[in-house]
Figure 1 (cartoon, rainbow, N blue to C red):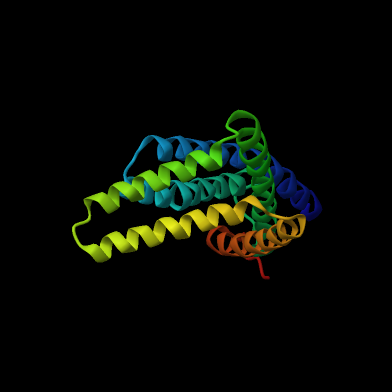
Figure 2 (tube, one colour):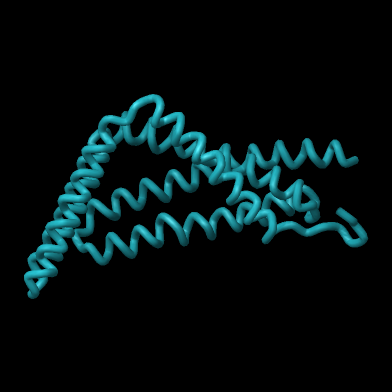
Length: 192
């Protein structure tokens, strides 16, 4: 019974990961279009918090609950961590394929440039509305810093991509443990 449950957790984690990845890629693409269409630094900042943290975490939590229900409603901490890690890893891979490869390279190849332009425009509007000279200097410094980070992102090497993948896997594992602690529900009378 336990081996069958482990297999079900892995399969359901894979399926839910594909769906979660597609949903989060769509959320990310919606945020891109939101960001390039608004010209307000406040709206971009609030949108970033909403679309980058709040909405994805809420959606991931719903998927964790759904995953737990798909495997019978009960799972141990280890089973929860395994299923959630598989779901998050596959989701991350799906986002990479859909958003970073298909969308950013085939559908919207100027994505990085449009993002930079939208952010610089918003910061320039913020700078123009500032009344104090130090606020204008601060906005100029942020614009220069942002332009440097966009330039640095252009020359990413294979080694940096591999390092980034390793860091992502570690982050996903830790996040999986945290989510597993919240969403585990052990059967009554189960001892770990």
